[in-house]
Length: 369
Image (cartoon, rainbow, N blue to C red; front, side, top):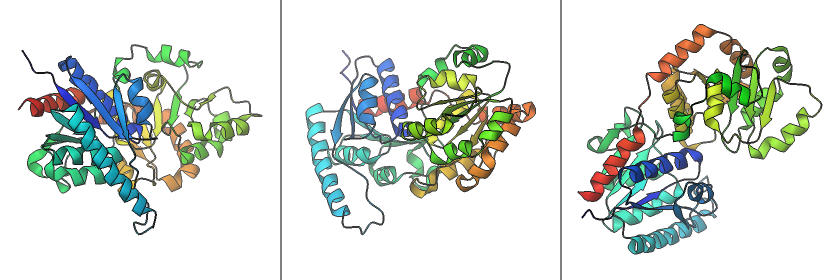
C-alpha cells in the first residue's frame, strides 16, 4: 500500500506567487489524490484568502518584508518577526510531518523552507522571474531542485539543480471554451470591433490608469472598445472622474473575475510584466504591451518584459513614458492585423506548457526518493 503523501507549499504576497502555488498543489492532487497539502503564508497577505478559496488549508506566519534602507530602526522588529516565524514554521512542520516542502517565493517561503532545511526535509523552489528573488536565492544552497521559467538562471542558482519548467498558470484560462465573439458579447460589446484589455493586477496600476485618464479624448474618438480593470484601490476615484463622460466603448471595473473570458475577448492586452502574467500570454498566444512596474525588487519586471520584447514577442513601454505614449501605441497596434499576428506567433514560441504537472512530478519524486 502506497504511503500517504504529505506536502508543504509556501509563499505568496502577490497573485504572481499564489497562482503558481495553487496550480502546483492542484497538479500534485491530480497525480496523487491521497496527498495531504498544507500551505504556509504570511498573515495579512492575500494568500490567506485566496488559498482557502481554492480549497486548501493555510497557516499564517507573522512575517513581513525588510524596510528600505536596511538600517532603518524598524527592521529590528522585522528581524524578530522573522525568527518568530521560523520557530512557528518548525512547530508546524513537526506537527504536519511533510515528506517535501515547496517554495514559490515571497516572505513566508524564506521562513517555512528555511525551517524545512534545518529539519532535513527535502525542498524544491520555483522561481517565476527572469531575475531571482531574494528568498529563493537564500534558499537555493539547500534546495534539492530549482524549477525556473527562463534560460540563463545559472547566474543565480547552482546549474546542476536547475530545471526549465516554465510557470504554472491558472487552469481556468486554458479551459475557457468561449469563442472570441461570445466573450466580447458577454462583456456587452460588439464582436465586430477591436477590443483592448487593460489590467494592472488585482490592486491596479496607477500608471496604466493615468494613461487612460489623460487620453479619454482618444478613447472617445477611436472605434476601439476598452475593458479596463482599474484595481480596487483606484476604482472609486476613477468612477468619479468618468461620471459625466459618455464613453459607451469603455467599460471600467475594479476586478475581473473571469479572466479567461476577458483574455479571449481581447485582441490586445496592456499589462504589467509580472512573471505569471507573462506565462499566461505565452500559453494563450496573446499580443501584449508590457508596462513594467518600477516598484519591484531588482527591477525584475523590466527584465521580464525585455526577455519578450527582444524576441519581438511583446511591445515594451517604460513606466515613465506610458502616460504620454501608451494609449496611442495601443490603438495603432490593435488596428494593425499583421502586427497582432506577428506578436501572437512569436509569444506562442516561448510557451512552456504543462508546467504545473512537470513540477508536481518532481515534488512527488523528491518526496518518495
